[in-house]
Length: 81
Image (cartoon, rainbow, N blue to C red; front, side, top):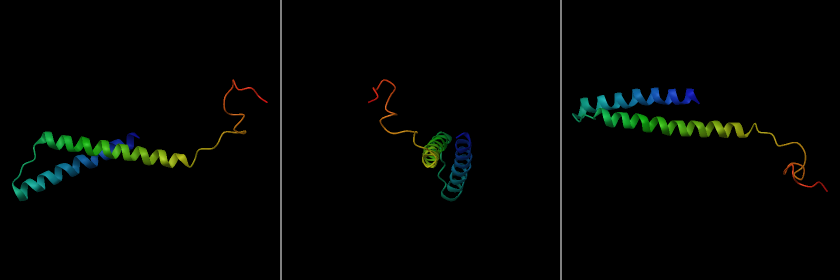
């Protein structure tokens, strides 16, 4: 999970600043650093959520059911018939 967060942070940091500088060069509109930081944090959090979701979906295929039948695995306090 750390790898996903740091990768997303690095990519968003570079892309947001490059896009802002190119936009400022060609259009003359400067994007304030506070807004850049907000964009970087937003992209990082979004990518982290999506990355974590994909990681959980991949683990679902690896789960194995409990041994026994349903009547055996419902709880320890259940009376056996």
